[in-house]
Image (cartoon, rainbow, N blue to C red):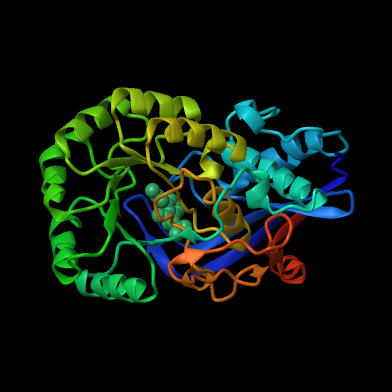
Amino acid sequence: MQIERAEVFLVPLRLREPFESSAATVQDRIIVLVALHGDGKTGWGECVAGETPHYSPETTETAWHVLTRLLLPAVVGREHAGRPGVGGTVWTPARGHPMANAAVEMAVWDLQAKRDDVLLCTAIGGTRRAVPVGVSIGLQRNDKALLEQVGSSLEEGYLRVKIKIRPGRDVGMLRSVRDRFPTASLMVDANSGYTIADLERLRELDDLGLMMIEEPLAPGDFQGYAELQAALRTPVCLDESICSVVDAQRALELGSCRVINVKPGRVGGFGEARSIHELCLGLGIPMWCGGMLESGVGRAHNVALSTLPGFTLPGDISASRRYWERDLVYPEWEVTDGALTPLESPGIGVEPDRARIEDLSVRRTEIA
Ligand code: OSB
Ligand code: MG
């Protein structure tokens, strides 16, 4: 099919609370939205790059450059019989830049699903509807504030709680959480705040009954991770380290992790995410979909991905109101019985609030 016209929007959106990890504190997000028009339909994608390169090298500004100068000019006006990214062979004039590429790839999937009048989750091979969800809680002012956050998340029905840690805010803090919530499904995410020299400290986490410890060491240190995983009973989960199916293969061969967090933006889109899914499903490695503090648009893509059969663990895909005073889509995403469920409408299902997106945009361009 032909993509006739594309738009890119930069939409500042303030999180209800600052979100602190070992790598950075974020409150003011800049949501990058891509709209692709063709056959009278509009496909939407969200680029999940951060405002600063604390999580990965891409930023909203590198994404703007790649999208508006390189990717979209190459895509608009061309015939796209297949979907970019399918089968892991991404055609792109911009090597690297997975988050910029993913925004376009996923918008193409949405556009084609709408043209074919099918749900996005069905188009990508999803077999489930309701997807189990958890929450990711940032570093808090003190243990009391954290205990309150964990308690209210469990009351809201979230099936597992992820807690951000950093050296000095780890073992003691988690002991108090475990004491208060003895049976809760808990996990931690260190965003590469540790080194292998912290092995003894990390081993103290083994007695807390955590589901997993996410990305404690430097991204891509597969050897270090293998050493760590061999020394821990708690499963290691990789996030930042896995940028492709080749990375996943290497990590699993070396024994660097036992769980994988898949974020479609981090790996360049649904094509690569599906390759990782296939690999992990074959090896019996559990997966879950991570989050990047997305608006309701990116969340829709994450929900769709999570309907694939291998996504057995609750994802970091929470309700709109956990993040935003008001989301950019309607209806907003809501959690029922610990799950989010795609709407029964073609493509991503939710409708981006176009008037509000235009109104809030600080930058907007059209490629025709
Ligand atoms: O490491 O999983 C992460 C947010 C931004 C960047 C990286 C991460 C996160 C989260 C929040 O943990 C997940 C979410 O609720 O969107
Ligand atoms: Mg993470």
